[in-house]
Length: 359
Ligand SMILES: [Mn+2]
Image (cartoon, rainbow, N blue to C red; front, side):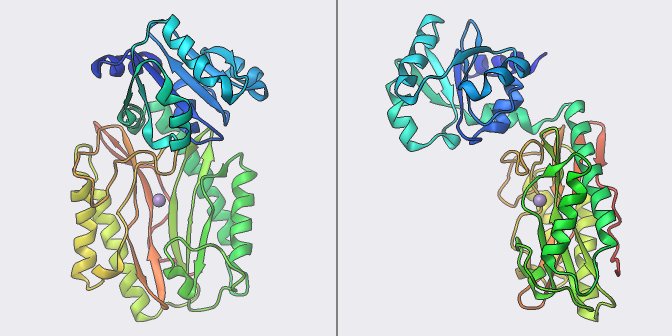
């Protein structure tokens, strides 16, 4: 079954006979790409009982005709948008139409959507649930994104030495990803010494020093799919506390990896790692969720191993497992892998060593 057919089935289950997926300057690019094949930054997908349409502007006419079988309808300007949508829905007899409230602005809702002569219903879960379950082809693309990222980091490790700045390390890492055909999944995080305790720290001009941890959190995007990996290295010999914290994160990460199977409740998986960290006395220094769903977005859907997710993680999910301990003004440690939770077992997609590495 094609994605559009599967999507239509979900619409029927929700008693909807139409859908509008709005993507303005990449506000909803991944879902638009996922459903239609069109990868551009501006698209309005309209699903009716009779057809599938893509409204986009002249920047994208050629690209849309190559990438998607959806019928192209030229976008003129925002003033005519309400009438355009109304006429498509009316001509094709759509009466109950779903849309995504989380990615639609208040202004656009008021100007365009609220005046459509149909029954509108927020239905964000449809795309989220579909995208949370990956096809074998999608898992393959994420694996390629992992592979590009891993080769890039292995190459970059030769460069990670006392005296280099965090900015230089991130620049080398980006170059190594780009030259392998990847893009950045998100802004690379490089934090050394006390800056490694900043959970999402930006690389700075600080020089790496002997006796510090260097935390690197990054990912590659290949053909629209992301990897997301964190490793923490030691520059020279770590002290006792650094070893103790690293060993704790390592153990929490390993136990969580082993516990990650399709069907486990997200918060229960989080708790596997959280308990180990708490028992080691570092509970208050692990503030974020254990992991998230990964795919065309780095935070792909609401699911994942978060303390607030009381639902089972579905078979077919790709998630991260990334416990961390951050001691303010001292150092931080995080280890992050990407896992595929298949119905026939879990596959860890990341292959880089996780043991404490001294560079
Ligand atoms: Mn992550």
